[in-house]
Length: 263
Image (cartoon, rainbow, N blue to C red):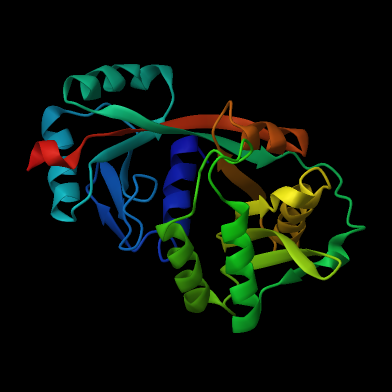
């Protein structure tokens, strides 16, 4: 599987979770989220240099769903001229993903007994409250800030997929207090890890590592062949996952144009 094929697969993995609809343009696939308006979930994945008419097609498609046009592609030498082209058309880099994959190291399961799977409305409420508390402003270990609209999305998709095996949420406890969370999405042999966070009061006690490794172990048990996550190189999470057994396979960047310039 090429890196582009992986990105397309990841987009399908998120369809019905963070993404509500996919639009195939032939030369690009546009993903659209009804709940979260950010460029993370509203973008076009491409694999080749684009002609002006193709960029215009992406723009008209995304404007029609009231989203800022965002074009996302693997960072490769043969795609560098696309960056220049997009720059002349008013696009600016909005984010870059470092796709990190599990290296296959041995996992310490001695603390797995403190982790529980969310399987009820009551546990979901605990998960959401803990998740929200893990992502606050002015946290040097959290480059993402507050969850905002994403918290609502997190709640809605659990109701949609609970019991299907597609999406699993986990909570780690310390002395019966929930202190860390994580999520695992299973799709066509791929285990995608997300929503990892721990309360600031327990940082350094290994709970972030615990819930991440729990996801990897669960992904293996589910029969997935690869286990991955996305971070940003240079940010704290990137170094954290590197320390606990993940390595970067490739990076990809998104370039966004302000929708107000197209109205």
